[in-house]
Length: 552
Image 1 (spheres, rainbow, N blue to C red):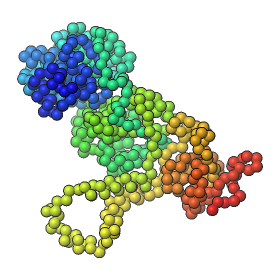
Image 2 (spheres, rainbow, N blue to C red; image 1 turned 45 degrees about the horizontal axis):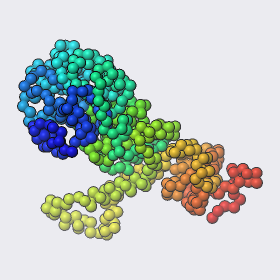
Image 3 (spheres, one colour; image 1 turned 30 degrees about the vertical axis):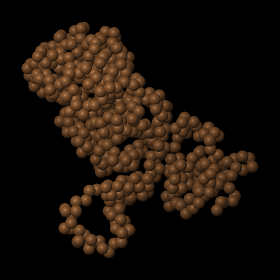
Image 4 (spheres, one colour; image 1 turned 90 degrees about the vertical axis):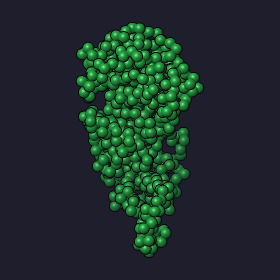
């Protein structure tokens, strides 16, 4: 199916063809004929980024009478940014329709200018609930003759506390209007609005309710709360070309994380409720233009930020409301592109992951927080790729090349590469040189099984003695990091860890016995020479004993 099959007028078809519209999305394919062919109310269930604006905007524009300067349609949405975006889209769709005027009304802008625009006559209003209600009460905005009402991102308007405003606005509209409600989720409050203000609505779904996009993969990392920021930096560093929103729960946390990232040299900024409108617009514009690589934001602050090329969404904390996770993850993987939703969790949140897997109907992948060696390698080869693929302008640099060749002639090819890499990466290598493993040790694995259950079902473990313990400030996570770093691999399955004052015991997959003994030879921890021996049970079956014969 293409747009010519949807019975839209020629002016609209010409405009959207110029915009590159070829075939309708699923929600557009289902919704546009339903609106054009009937005056019946409609509920559209679709995720953010699926083309909802065109789904309701094209058929409304198609049916608006541009000769009539009274308000014929109103579109309500949760934020100023989304309102501006919808208005811009509708103006593009109606480019070749003469005398059609669309006015956006929202808080944070001069209300006098908005009143003046309405008084000149317009057919479509796009507004946020608060400013719309204000204009109604001033007797400026009269909705008694409207034919179309759209509630876009209705669930978000309710989440942001606009329930009373919406009820007050809807009471001002005629019962004969056609109401269209679009939402990614369908909580009971939305059902109440549908029951109270809609007449036998048809329900159209572009995919399943409450389900995540198949273009988004979901991964999670498990770390201690104190290491969460370190984990965030490592995830950013292992993805050199990341373009991401980092979601935090509170304004304070948002400011704190953004400030830390900026102080550490990352191209980041914050978006939160304490910003003035001009500051907010400045930050959002920089992010849209990719002058920022990372935007740290709260859920509410990010509403209306429409960017189709995000590579990642990072949940610094999982949202309290599981439905909010769908909105967060739906900001990546848009317009046919792949994206990834990353969550940083602690050891008691495996249950939340299981619940989210059911909601998005996808399995979440547990990944280990990358170590310094992995990050340096990824960053280094990213640099090499850039160097290899850079366009060389010989005319610009030709005059300098003879002196450069002479200056560097004493270096061999291998030495030149080493110097080049060191210029770019000495600081990077220095930072990650002695970093430890920050993956959390959990009594429960990612699949919900205890280590004891996992041991009996999957792995035959060997037990080892090591001559450091609690007195040496050794913890279970540090022990795991010590094992991984010493063996220079991260796929060794680790079982039980028992910490004593001056020594400890740990279990690893039996097939790695020789590697453990070999890898710990000559190693130190906090200037203590390490001794690692295979632990053998005594005649009474007590496993907390050292072997009498040390392995070589």
